Every structure is written in C-alpha cells, then in structure tokens.
Amino acid sequence: MTMQSLYLINGTDPAKLAAVKAEMAIMGSPTVRVVDCGDHYMAIEGCHRLMAAAELGIAPRLTVLAQDDMVAADSLDIDGFAAGETYTAGEVAGELRGTYNPVLKINYDGTLTGG
View 1 (tube, one colour):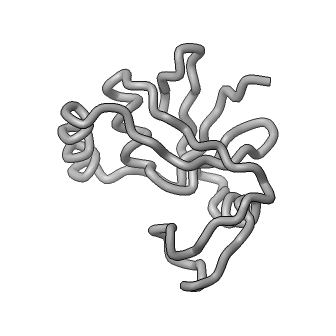
View 2: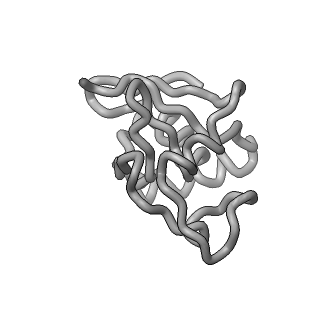
C-alpha cells in the first residue's frame, strides 16, 4: 500500500520556514525520518523541511522507520524524551501524534501538498 498522508510534529514558524526554503532552493531535497503507522506516516523531525519541500514542489527523501526500529532520544530535537535513552519509533510517533498535527498529502511523484 502506498502511503498518502504524512503527519507533521507541529506547525511551522513563518520566519524559520522562509529561511529553510531559501536554503533548500540551493541544497535541494531534504531527508527526513518518518514512522510507518499503518495508514499514514508520522514525521519525527523536520516539519519546516517538509513544509518547505511542499511549497517548493520538491520531493523529500523519506527514511521510513518500522514501529519497532529504535530511535535515540539524542537524535531528536524534541522535548519530552530522556537524553541518553532509546525508544521504539512507534513510541516516538505515538507521543508526537496529537489532534492538531498538520497533515501533508504525499503525491504519486513523491511531492507533498497541503498543510
């Protein structure tokens, strides 16, 4: 099954988004880790990079983690995970998934729309 929805950690700051878009216009497609949640992907990083890619029409490279893949808390730029600990990707996605997560649509060519 091809995933069609990508949930972001949270919304984006307009100033930071503009800076990321300017950098991405030069650097190209970002790589972002996402968790396979069965019927959607949940990003565990990179909400500004994903939204910038959507606005620029650039297909991001998604590193897809299975629910039981291990994620080091130190690799996350998110409060709420104990430094030095590891968690399953499913635990991280579960903690980040809320009612108000922005959602992007994954198009057939890999680009993103929505938000």
